[in-house]
View 1 (cartoon, helix red, strand yellow):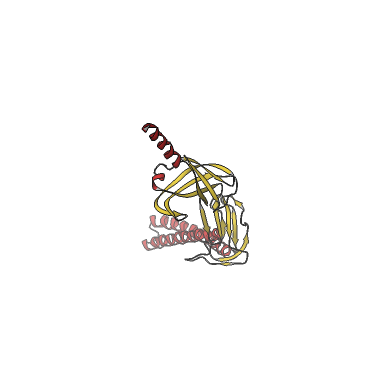
View 2 (view 1 turned 90 degrees about the horizontal axis):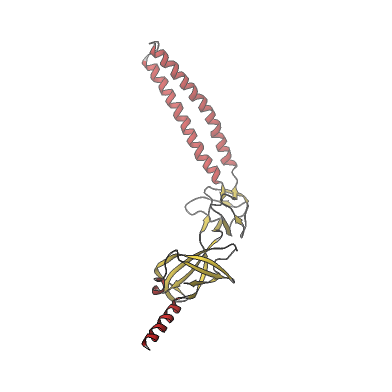
Length: 250
């Protein structure tokens, strides 16, 4: 009789740990995008709910001033390249004359100085071009990864300023991947491990998932203390953060 009681208790204990627990859906990766440079918004190419690919243009600032600066530096580089080439030829000529003792050491030193100065000015201009080209590139905001647009807080004609607290223009969430988050008692959490397969149900559909993380600090769900369990899963459907879900534990 005692054996039957022990077996029944063990079965009841396993059933208590298994089953479905309520959870909430969250984005697996969410980013707030701001402009890296200041300017007036010229065009916005996306709206809430749009699916975007990595590198896709999301919006563009009026880049007229940045384009003009890049063109100015490029023109200066052409001039400096010609001056550097001339200084290099002059140095070769003076070195040949110096070897034949036609010119003095001071003349050679002056030729070397002109060559070094011309090369240095050319390199500084090229560095300035790279810097200003980066500013020009930053006037176009692109998607950092495949995502869905979840917030749009920008319109054409808006003035944006890059600074210590830049304006959030767009919010993106990684597409095709979600998290189901719930809180469990410590004893129940200890029976699980990261990478373990579980299933998630939401909106009448079931998804295969894996445990992403097991919390180390206590939190609360519905007023009850517990530890955070995060389950990642893929979805072809467009789910919403905050939606209710069920996580089926092994």
